[in-house]
Length: 119
Image 1: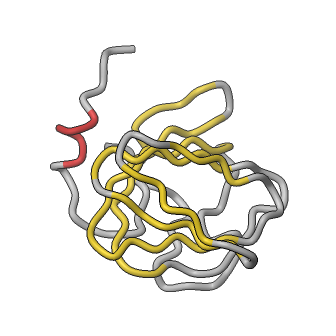
Image 2: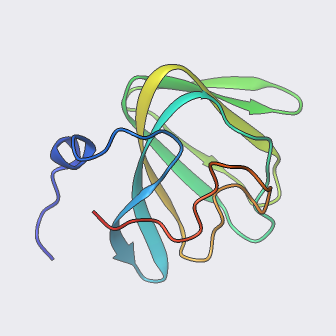
């Protein structure tokens, strides 16, 4: 595989909450996404979810607390934990999750992406 320039890939799209596939890793997908505003409350019953902030910052809301994830920081949301990302301003993240992961956790939402675009 050739090196992937994350900053260059991020210039190829502008939509929010629509993860783009940039790599495959042993049954996992490596994705880029831009976040802005609120997402939906959801959980992934069978999968953990990895977020690495490339640009900006976002808040991960849990039912019992809120954590800010800053540029250069990462967080893993364990399977089964209900969460809702929120970005007051645009934020870019790298995601690593099982290829089978539904990014809304099965919640019906107009932003749901069933087959992420490969960029």
